[in-house]
Image 1 (spheres, one colour):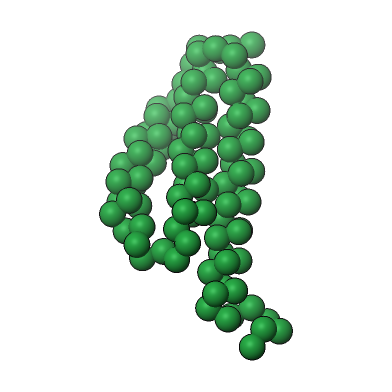
Image 2 (cartoon, rainbow, N blue to C red):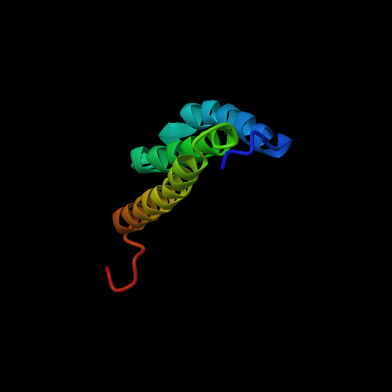
Length: 95
């Protein structure tokens, strides 16, 4: 079911994502427990790569990997935010 067609926006998103990865590495010390945010961001970059690749071959496999990467990113970002607020003591019911 490979169409062999990729959209220009998919490639532009990938290039911008890779470029912003450099900025993320530069600013990573500003994030507490940045490793979870990095894994979430890396999952998004992986999904952007899978979007481009699925246009050429193995559509079903790379489509699954794309959506799985987005799900992992959500888990990593949510975990990172949760840890950030627990360490800052900003969770309700915690003094």
